[in-house]
Image 1 (spheres, one colour):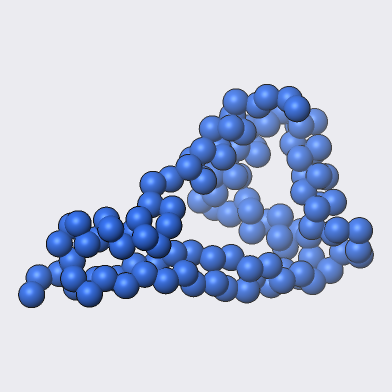
Image 2 (spheres, rainbow, N blue to C red; image 1 turned 30 degrees about the vertical axis):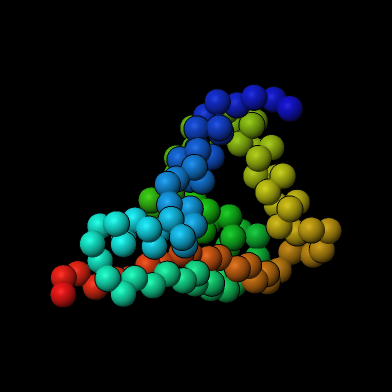
Length: 112
């Protein structure tokens, strides 16, 4: 495996974040004095028309991935896009795909 420090740094910025569980979020808010704290995980289905639609969603206007990708050597960028497309297609024709995204949420009440 080839080491790529910029890729490692991007992965860390996206995934190595504090409070990665509902329990950790519950504790954070409870320790801050909020009451009736609830946590949940929300899931949404994201529908894409084809690979190009999916790819453009990754390169959104405020995307860490876009910043990383546009800073790559053009050949490496091409290889990355090609590998991503192969994964998206999964041996099937290009076209519609539905993927699931999730986010943890927390709510609580301040004061009495």
